[in-house]
Amino acid sequence: MGRMNVSLCGLPLDNPVIPASGTFGYGYEFAELYDINCLGTFSFKGTTREPRFGNPTPRIAECTAGMINAVGLQNPGVDRVIAEELPRLKQCFHKKVMANVSGFSVADYAYTCEKLDKEEQVGWLEVNVSCPNVHGGGMSFGTDPRAAAEVTKAVKAVTKKPVIVKLSPNVTDIAAIAKACEDAGADGISLINTLLGMRIDLKTKKPVIANGMGGFSGPAVFPVALRMVYQVHKAVRIPVVGMGGVSSARDVIEMMLAGATAVEIGAANLVNPFICRDIIAQLPETMDQYHIQTLEEIIGGA
Amino acid sequence: MKQGIFTITDNVPLTAAVYKMRLNGDTSAIAAPGQFVNIRLDGFYLRRPLSVCDWEKDSLTLIYKVVGGGTERMSRMTAGEQLDVLTGLGNGYDLSLSGNRPLLLGGGVGVPPLYALAKALIKQGKQVHAVLGFNTAQEVFGVGEFRALGAQVTVTTADGSSGVKGFVTDALPANYTYVYTCGPEPMLKAVYKRTVTGGQYSFEERMGCGFGACMGCSCKTITGFKRICKDGPVLQKEEILWDE
Image (cartoon, rainbow over all chains, first blue to last red):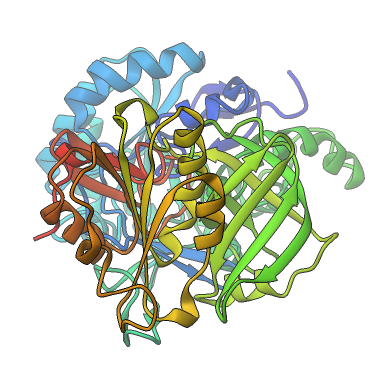
């Protein structure tokens, strides 16, 4: 075992660093820049039953220490992901990948997960019940403990792979929702998805984002994310994957101390495409600086 | 795509709001006129995508308009300051379709990427006619530079204070073999309607990453969904689908 190894829902990771869904495509753009096999794994672009274009543009707005996106789950649909994206991904990434799944009904989630369950390269299913950018789905499942549990149960019934439920921070009691997912059979919890936010253009006096609102992410949300990871880790016995504004090796360690077994990195990839590689390279030195022998031993230490 | 540190050698105003910045750095990733770079600025979270006006081995020229806080900050930077730049982004223009008499239509800050294109086409022996559109005489830039390359240049201004009164589409020549254009979307739409040959149209959109990862700048085309930053910014006329 190396100093950075962790185990996520029974599957080994060489390190806890995972690019977050929606900021890493299917890996190819980054594989042109560096060998992405240095990553623990990565969570690929949110996949739905049917192909989706997503929301009208503009979909992006800048904020102080962050950004808002309202992409709206653009993806080619699960059949084309399996037929086209996964074989291409296999050329540049040789580890198990995390499949991120979204839906508009419980049946959608189960349908998509059942198909991805048959893909050998998929190690984990990250079930996104927290997309703030689509109507009639996504976040509406993640803001109600019963609905989140129902999705979890339906997905667990169709797959043997570990199911990690990705939660929304746009709730009053994150621990209750995490607990409901655990009780429904979830193997892990990941959080936080983006915070609902908006910007208004002073020139047009209208929202910058065509959809009006979108999901806020970036370094500004880190303390909120850290607090929620801490609360969820205290409430459940299953592993927690922490994310939200992580941009440095120190942030990774802080997330793990709060209770994260692994750490996803999102918006930072869009600003510095080398960030995940650089954080992995920096981690041993930062661990030395704080007298940390192995990352596994600090999980939830705070 | 490459990431590199560039050093500013020069940053001067061309008009009240348009600046020309020259930088030194590794330009080896830039493969075609019409590509863009993405610049990181202190104090701003997202990078600023800017079209490449011209490049040589180890030097880069950008012409940009101050439209917000980021470009305002850029305008105050001076020689010797350094910038983190992603280079070689986007597809750029395909020169092989130009024919012998390509027509270049640029509006405002859509003019700069056509400069390196004109240079490359003239080097191939093509007769380049550039129609450059601006709002007023005070906003005109680049005309002398295009003429110095050997291009025939027509200037239009919306208020008639310089050149032909009107838009670039009010000064279309009779004979041309192909269209290359860059400018605001209403101009691109007018060019699409009023020109008769095939062409390549360079689009602008708010971007997240600028290199194809975030799907922030997607558009619908005849040939499917495309990312302006990665599959564009240049689209073929035949594949364009305008928003309703």
